[in-house]
Each structure stands twice: as C-alpha cells, then as structure tokens.
Image 1 (cartoon, rainbow, N blue to C red):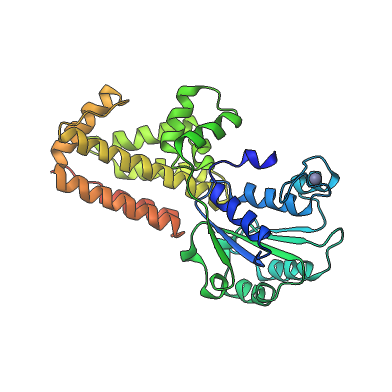
Image 2 (tube, helix red, strand yellow):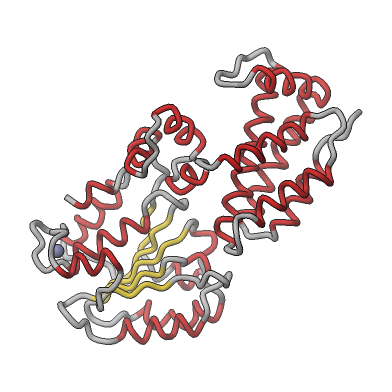
Length: 336
Ligand SMILES: [Zn+2]
C-alpha cells in the first residue's frame, strides 16, 4: 500500500481516517511540523487517496490508475499546488489569487478538488488576506491542505480557519529506514546521519555532503584555536551559504547545520571538562575541546551554547544570514 512509504505519521493518518469515517472531514487543514518529516508526501498521498479512480479501500489509493499516476507527477487537473517561487521569500498575492480562482472552479473528474499550499510559512499580509474568503467558504468538494513548519508564523486569521494537524520529527529508527530507501547504503553512515538529522529526512540527507563536514572542521578548529581568526571564519561560513545557491531554504539549512555542529562541539567540551567521556569523538578534537573548555570555563561554555541556540532561532526566523554569522562570531570567546 502506498501509505507504507510514510513513516512515523500514523497519528495524522488515523485522524484523517477517523474524520472521513465519521463524515466530519474539515475543509482546511494546517499540517504543522519541521521540514523533512513527511508533510508533503503525506499531502500527496492523501490527495491520491481522494482522487483515485479505483480505491481498493477507504482513503487508500490503488497506485495504478491514471489519476494516481497524475497526482504522483503533479498533473492531475483537480490537484492545485501553490509554492513560493524560488527567487521570492513570500507567497505573491497574484499567485494566491490565481490559486483561489482555480480552486473555485468545479472539479473536472470527480467530486473532489485538492488545493495544497506547500509554503504556508510564507504568507504575507496581502496573500493571506486574498486567501481568507476561499479558506472561509471553500467551494463544495474542495479540500485545502496548508503545510507549515510552525504555528507561530501563521497569521491568526489563517490559523483560526484551519484544523491543525501536528507532524512529529521521525524517530531515529524511522529516519534510518527512510534513509535506506533514499540511497544511503552504508549502515554506519545512516546511523551518523540519523543521529544528527533531528528527525528530518531533508536535514539528514543534507548532512550527507563532505563540504559540510569540512566547514564544520574549520569552524570547530577556529573556535578552539588559541588565536581565532574571526574574519577568516566569517568568510568560510559566508562562502558556505553562498555555495548553497540563491534559494534561501538550502542556505538556512546549511546555517542551521553549522550552528548545530557548534552547539554539539560546545556540549562535548562541557562534558569533557566534567570528566564525562564522549563516544565517537576524534582524539585530536577531544584534546582541543578539553583545552578550550579549560580556557573558557563552564560559564563561558554555557553562555556560548545559549548564543548558538539563539542564533539558530534567528536563522529560523529568517533574520539575514550574514547578520546571524556576524553575531555568532562576535560572541566567540577571545583569548584571556
Ligand atoms: Zn488509483
């Protein structure tokens, strides 16, 4: 069954099954959870289940009929998908209007029409406003699915008109199972990526990139060196963002991964300073981190950890990356 490819989101699936069973399906759902936990795949699978021409069971797609194939490649006339254009940071109001106009047309094949807003994090005031009428009174048969990483970023007007459905990060076991299907063949590598992937497939896959580990090495070396060259470190980090291309999504992901590495390095330093062993740590790095911990002291390490976590929040809130990098590097402890 096609639902099998979605792991760890049984609660969300059961909620939909129960709603359909009871005839209480809402018009609009906000699917909320971190990137890379399967929200998009889930929305696609649900769409397929609704539009399938020969469903073998309730809310289950056959994966064989023309409708299933068209949903899979995104060409089904009763499936509408709205995304933020690659060169924009917000959902343009004109795109939103066009989407609403299409949703309002009668379904062409069956009783249902599915509208998916994949980047519901990116509403601005005008695109949100132009969506309200459709969201409030969707045309008969329409189902709207909005995908977002957090409810914090939603305008109250949007939030109040949707049923919120939470998507949790994947467990390490589920994440490893998905990575195996995504071509990560080496089990040791799967373990490492799953450990650092924070329950997100896209995050774990992004970590499968040597350049990320090289930048990590440079930053950790810089952080722990006796005379850190802040300017050089800032350049390494900035270049790393730029190499991700123009899209802000991959840039933010890289920034966030680097900060995660830095938090981890500081946590390792804290543990080592307390005499706790850290497994899987390169002995040279362990020695450097230990010496660093002695120079900076426990309070200094705690402060640094807070700064990195705070910087990661800024990255999530889409503060300009260069400002985040500068603020982090300014917080690196100077030699005493
Ligand atoms: Zn089908």
